[in-house]
Image 1 (cartoon, rainbow, N blue to C red):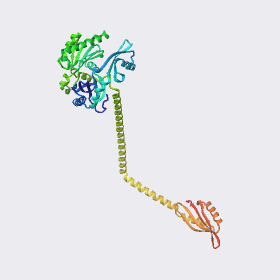
Image 2 (image 1 turned 135 degrees about the vertical axis):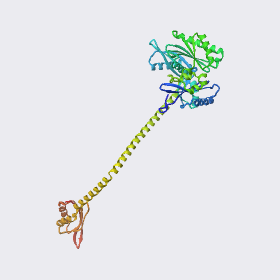
Image 3 (image 1 turned 60 degrees about the vertical axis):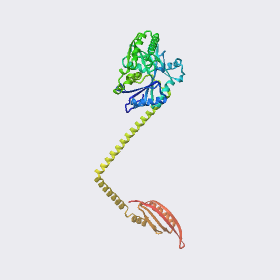
Image 4 (image 1 turned 90 degrees about the vertical axis):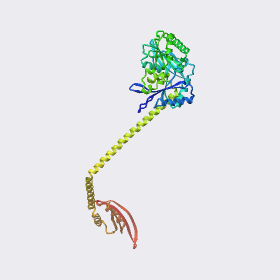
Length: 479
């Protein structure tokens, strides 16, 4: 059964058989279980709508904070059979019993839910097990009502297993005893014979507390109990029943039944009230009529122990529960991822904030030094500009001086430009085109000029004489 990882919640048990509705909430702390609230109602005259309303009323009465419940199914719905399996391996035993189950019931395979309980190993050859079969229709009929009342089905267990385990928990049965337990419910009674603290024999008789008001019914039930004990001892000859516990509410009919059973079976009887052997809160014990005077013992003993080993939950509900658990796991994982992401983001933001604060503090502490550094950077930049100016000053004059020595008499300069990058551009006129090309060669060989290019050379007539306009470019090397 799934439990909240954050808020501890009480466990909810529900018993519904169409005749009575029983509920209990249990709180577990440090391995100790305490019944918090109980609820009992006779629903034999209610239709489906009335059952749903009564279940909702019960949830309010037991103050349940959760809606997933251990559902206890009455033993009168169960078919039980002792089987022997030639194996000690749990998986093999389960597989063999599933194959044999259809031979022990009139139900089709898809119309039943079965489970088993290993009882003992015999002669080191085989395992004795108790096979339990319940009609799927009987289960679904009552589970549907609970679901419509808003109750989620966490598990489905049969009443006699919780009874047996509760009796052992209360110390009323030990491994050395062969004990009969008769649970008197509202309209039927369950006979359970326990060996080695396990239910070796189970039978349900249709005589309950309502019928026990009549002496004839008490004698009838005592006779049926006697027959059942004889049937058990016919197969277990070395295990005589030494004691019979009559389990039921505080009613005179139980004491009268004890006398009838003792006379019929010749076995000592003991009246047992579950309320005297389970831990219950003050609020639960204040519900005197429900706890002590109502046939609610099956739920009280089941509530005193953890969930039963045999689970009869139908496959469709099992699948739904599996999907729900998986969804809860995914949601929990997603929440955890979001929390981790939020923590990481918080750490990141904190680091950014701390670094920003640290930088702001450094800026504040070094403000004067930053101003001094900025002043020095400006001074350095000024020095660099002065050095560049000194390096480049006079470049135009130097270029003009060099050209003056190189330029032939037949060539005239019309324009000369020197840009900031040291690129020199010349435009002029020559009387001879051949003189232009020879000048380019001289220009290229001069050590102060690089990348000399003849941009153009065009001929034209001036007073009937051929003249050549030219354009040259070069880079002036720094000296």
